[in-house]
Every structure is written in C-alpha cells, then in structure tokens.
Length: 518
Image (cartoon, rainbow, N blue to C red):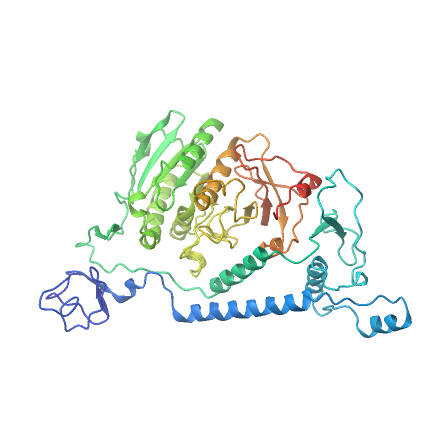
C-alpha cells in the first residue's frame, strides 16, 4: 500500500529499501525526506522462509547422521571376522560370538546382512540360507578385476520377481562419493519433513498495483489473470511454426477462432527459470509430437516473470502462473477438451501443481515433470510443489538431483536417469550442470518417437541405489511418452552419452558390464 504521510506502520518494511519501520519515523532510515512511497507486510521480506527452527533441526540430524556413519565405518572397516570352527577353540568362539542379526525387524536384518556382506564386515554365510556363490563364467572381459556374487532372500529361492538378485562386491569399502551422497539424501529428507508454507504475500492495493523493478527483478503486483506476462500459444499440424495466441478470461476464449481441436490430445508445455517457450529442448518436444500425429501443442510463456538472476522472485511468481494456467484449462474444458497433459521443465514443473490446486476436484489426465526444480522447494508442503496428487498420473524424470533438480520422488513413478545426478557426456561439456539439467527435456523429446525406447528397472530407493542394492532386473519399465501407467515407484534408467540416447530393451548381463555406479 502507499505510505501514509510517507510512513509505514509498525512491523512493515519499505519495499525499495527493505528496512523495517517503527510506525513513527519516515519510511526508510528516519531522515527528514522519505526514501520510499511503498510499504508491505514484513512477512513479505522473508522470501527464503529460512526459520531458525528447521535449520537447527536439519543441522542436528546431519551431525547425528555423520556420527552414525562414522561409527558404522569404524565397526565395519575393522574387518573382525567370526573364526570358522576348524578346531575346538574356534568352534567355541563361533558359538559364543554369533553373527550379527536383527530378529525383531526381519527386513532390516536382511538389509544389514546385504550391506555388510558388500563391505566384508564379518557377516557369516550361515545367516543367509543360500550361501554366496560365484556365478558361472560369462563373456565378461577377464581384465575386469571384480567379483560378482549371487545372493538370495532368506527362505526364498529367488528374488520377488523370480530372478536372481545380484550384488556387486567391490572388494573394499563404499566409495566416498556414495557416502557423501547418502548424507545429502538424509539432509534433504530431514529438511523436507519440517515443512513450512512458502508465502511471499502481496499486500499492494489492486487499484494501485503495477509492475516495478527491484534491481533487474520484475515484481509483478498484478496477481490476477489474464495477465499479459503469462501468454499461451497454440501449435498444430496446420501451424507448426507460427503459434496462434490463445486469449482466455474467466468466462470466454478465442479457441473457436484458432486451429484447436477438442477431440485430439492436448499437450501443454511450461518452461522454467531463465528461459522462454522457445528454449530449444522444449521446441524439440513440440516438434516431435507434431511428427508423431495430431495434437494440440500449447506453449506457456512467462519469461518476464522468470528472468535471471531473480530466482526467488521467479519462485514467488509460480503460483500466479499456475492460476493463469488453471484459467486456460477451464476454458479448454468448456470447449470440450478431455485429454490434457501438462509437461513442465525445471521450475515450470511446479506450475501445474498450483494449477491443480485451483482445478480440484477436477484432475488433469497427466503431468510430466522434467527434473523439477529443487531450490526453495525442499521445505514446502506437498500442495506447493509437484506431487502425485496433482493429476491422475504423474511421471517424473530426474537428471540433476542435488544441484538444480529434486532428489525426492515427486510422482506416481520417478525415473532416475543414470542415477539421477550426473549424465554421461556432460562433464566434457562446457556447462556440465546445465547439461545434466537439460538432459531431462532431451530424453523426453527423444522418447516420443523412439523405436527402441528408454527402459528402466525398479529400485527400492535412492539410498539403496547408492549402497549398490539395485542391480538391473526385470520387469523392465518404459520411460517417456509411452510409459506404462500401471507401474509405480523408483526406477533407474541407463542411457548413452550422445544422441540418440536410448539404449533399448536391456539384458541383465549387458547392464552388468556397463556399471551404472561408475
């Protein structure tokens, strides 16, 4: 609101100076001349929402996690083994010092046995029904100095899916990078459990609201739709190059004057931070769909609200863009559209989540998240970021976790491409982190018309992957446009380092020779 007599009320701050006011002094530093004419509630200045409480909790959990890992490492690396009963003395020791087990939690016991067997921590083969055995010789190169073992679940002849579960024995300890990654996972999920509402309130009077800049950052005070800063362009087989702008409001639209056809599937593509709807990888997605068949391709452009280096302000604008997207979807439904699939990249992956909040109880047919953005979305509640409740089916690709993308599962099915952190061929790239992040869009674009497809296999979770407990196995699950919507959970996918990236249907033996953990 406008300062009254150039003064802000108590607990407010001056927007242009970001200084608290006491309700007595002039707005700003208390000088005779006012330094700002706009005030806002002080809560709006806490853009990052970093409260001391959750930060302290995260720090405590980090310390405890590190202490636990150090303790486990000391106990594990000592390599104390139970003596084998070759003579009476050793037989006595074997009886008086039985192998470690956890009978009160069978699943945890089994998990610990696997982990400790990987690291030579003294677990006796007697604790597993089926002893560790050497596999039969394969065509694997003899130059690879690595032993592989077969392990079976206790009381079962095979793994749950009927295939032998294999574990790679590294002849040593867990690599340090995996230990660090486990710590990061613990930290992120610890912070994620202490959720807070991320709100940057807009207290400006609607009649006085106008766009203005704080440095290079556009502050959009007009949080109503339609908004000239959030535009929609339609591409079809009749206009594949030149988009037709869609104009919508609360009651009407110009859909009847465009090439939109309600009877065919509609794909809505949302760009992310510091880009626009003409980002090359997103244009590739659009063009691949037009090659595939008849679709309504709608590109959402909100680039002026997502410019660099204004990431916090871009995050603040995401709910507003979601509101405008919901308004568009309402008009599409009024026109008869039923099959609506929203594809969001990076920060744009969270936009349909806010649109879903407005559209409820209606649900979109599908949302695809391409490496959803992580910064400022760790501590927020589920209804303020992409999650499985936002559509009938939500599938997510992870390619740059911990840096620009989220590590936590965000959909009904999550594909962690090459482990989800680094992508092959990107470290030779001039911008490896940007390369990793954009690979999500590249992989999805290729999947639309790929003849061989991107195939993955199920895993128990990211920590299990880091511990080496996710060997390739069946059932194989197809990633991308033609994903099987019946499957759920965490899946790993291996790709090539260069386009075309798809490796097609895998064989367990071939993937063992191409180590995903390297």
